[in-house]
Amino acid sequence: MKYILATLLICSAFAGQMAQAKDRITGFVLRGDTSGAVGQRNHFDNPNGANWGTSVDGIVVQVEWAHLQTTKDGEITSNNVIDQAITAVTQWNDAHPNNKLGIKLRVFAGIYSPAWVGKETGQFYAQYKNGKEGYLPFFWKSKLFRPLWNTFQTKLAAKYDGNPLIREVAVSGCMTHNAETMWRNPNDNNRDDGRKNIDIMRDNGLTLAKDENCLEWEIRIAANKWKNTHIGMAYNMWKDYENGWALKPEFVNSLMDYCLAQAPGRCVLGNNSLGLADIGDETSRNDVTYYLRQKGGAGNPIYIQTETVADDIHVAINHGADRLHAAMAELPKLSAMAKVSPTYLQGTNMQDARQNLKGN
Image 1: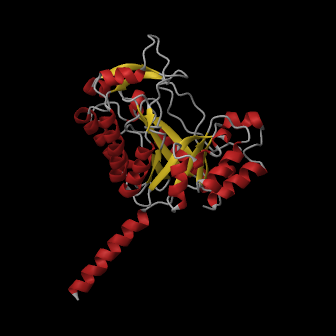
Image 2 (image 1 turned 45 degrees about the vertical axis):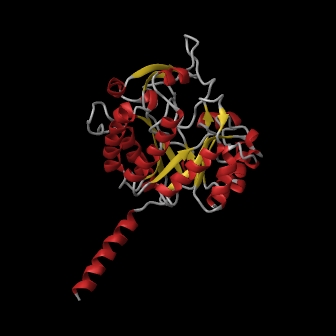
Image 3 (image 1 turned 180 degrees about the horizontal axis):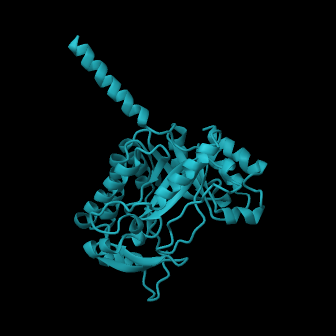
């Protein structure tokens, strides 16, 4: 009898844990209309008082690490932009029970890290296009950087992993200037001194092996800390900057498998730049979308983020749903869609694409 009772208690506790797991967001998510400049990337699109809330299924909260943890080992800042977004979405959901919204959280490290991080790890002034510039910590120095990110993620997840509105969190520990943490490009710089950011990183100890190890590590951290929340990983084609920037598609494939294994059923694979020009690329083994198509076809969660240009973007979204098996799309900025038409988001083309995603 005692054994049966103990078994029932264990099963009951396990069922309670399972009940806490959150569904992923499907359909449309707005990724926010804000500047990418350091200090200005703490933002979300507020659905209250707007005319687009019933046309989407969620919002992205963009937030800088510097905004959330101002001191080493410090607590998460109170009344931060995440808290404000939760309040706003709660207000919306209470008023619109038939069109409730969820939140995807995208925390930016890299040049958006607190000043104290760079002092701990070493840093250099990185300059990228579109005004994205700031001090980049040496995230590849594992003994110095990893304990800091680990502590931060522990505190962040402790506060928000149990919140039912936070449905997905981006994997972003080993980033430079955006949350595409695999983005290493020989031309992705706009330095006043004419140098390349990647060369300065290598001069300060970055190696391809350390970089690849960091990408696996950031996945493990996200999977281990956010146990009730989906983790979204943006994939780019990996390039061997130690050997003439040769493509390494096999690493892309293995890193996708690694995420799926670390967070079974909770790892959402994606790419942050799908546009009309990408249609057809999924047939090439040298393109990320090829591997997204294979994984999505096997029933794994897939998301897409569109290009910033909104012209006929519904065509690319439908392609992502039909060919890549994507169930969620992060949309262009509201201002970009308004340039196409004031009612483009609410129109038949976009709303049909939204339902197409929801069918996956």
